[in-house]
Image (tube, rainbow, N blue to C red):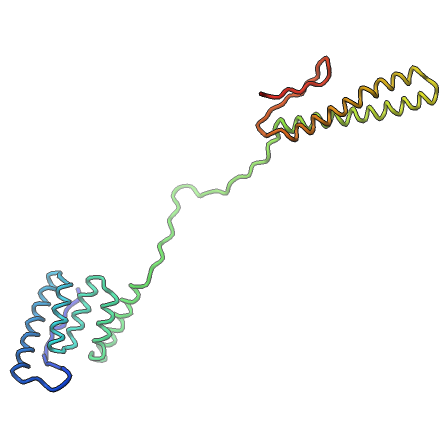
Length: 226
C-alpha cells in the first residue's frame, strides 16, 4: 500500500515579505487541518478529493512532502503522468537516499505508460494448411476439340493421299482408278473441314457445356445441350 508522508516540521515559504506571526500561525494551522482531512479522504479511497486537499495544504504551507502525497493519490487514480510530474517536483527536496527510491518509482511509472503490443492469438484447432491447387479438369469441350482435330487430320491425310493417287492414275491413263480416287478426295476434303470446324467449336464452348460427337448414317453428328 502506498503510504503518505506525515508532514512534520510545518513552515510557510512564500515569495515577498514574511507574513505577520499571527497570520503565519493561522496558515500553518489551516495547512495541518487540510493535511489531516486529505489523509482521511485518501484512506477512504476518495483520491480525487484528497488531491485537491493536499494541494491546498501545499499552497498554504509550501511543505514539499505534500507533493509526494499528491503523487500517491494520482497514481491510485491511474493519472500516471501527473504522478510523475508531482514526484519530479518533490525530488529536489528529498534526501539522496530518497532520490534513489524516487528515481526507481518514476521509471516504473513511465514504463507503465508505454503502450504494450497485444499478444498474438493462440491457434485454436488444427493448423491452417495452404490451399491445394487442383489440376485443371479436362471437360467435354476438350473431348470435342480432340475428336474434331483427329477427324480433321485424318481426312486431310486421306484427301492428300487420294489426290496423289488420282493424279498418278490420270497420268497412267487408268480412268477407273482416277474416278475412284477423285470420289474419295471429294468426300475427304469436306470431312476434313468438318473436323476442323468441330475442333474450333470445342475451343469456343464454355466449361459447363457438354457436347457429344457421334457418327450417323449421314456422317458426323454434333449434339449440344439446350
